[in-house]
Image: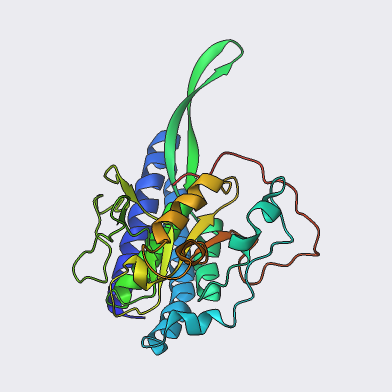
Length: 292
């Protein structure tokens, strides 16, 4: 695995989990034995993520000069026979069935984010037996975790990955906000949370797949803008239509059709590679809305 990725993953995982667990240790008074177990747990998580991303990076390194559309040919699309809520699979069928290049690699990262999300403590107030009691709950940042790992892959490939994590676009001019080099998305957040806050008026699809990875991620070079939805976070028509408008060119034959065909919906885990279904609709996922 390239050295920059090892360093980056180590910083992300260690920093996030140690900060969070240190907070919990202070609150719960963990013993020395529990602290040793904590260190072991962190190391196991690091190794699991490294192994997952190693295969992803090696595959993309070998295809650095290949157009993304070439990889899309073999994709079967998502599982439009599966609905997590209501008629979701019918209402968003065209976006679910859209061919997405590198679906196996994207699925790997999203599966890790679903199974081992970075978590942060949040203080809340609950009413128990008439009394207001303060307590701490865990908030799982699944989308944030996935975005960090996609960004790690991009950095390891010297910003030539076809997968751009939450790149920013001007909502009016549709121009991409480019970093240095021009294939790197410009960020406005901090080192810990690079994706937020986002200046008003900007649009940022969860994941953008470029056609030519040596060129900037301007909308003309976008093969697919992918909206990723983890359990508890539902697809919204107005959100997808906003991205269709963003990807719609100002010239050309049938520009609206072109814009629609560039937008895809990927539900985790339903539309990930390896998800098995009998063809029947799955029960509605319950729980709090997915946090960023």
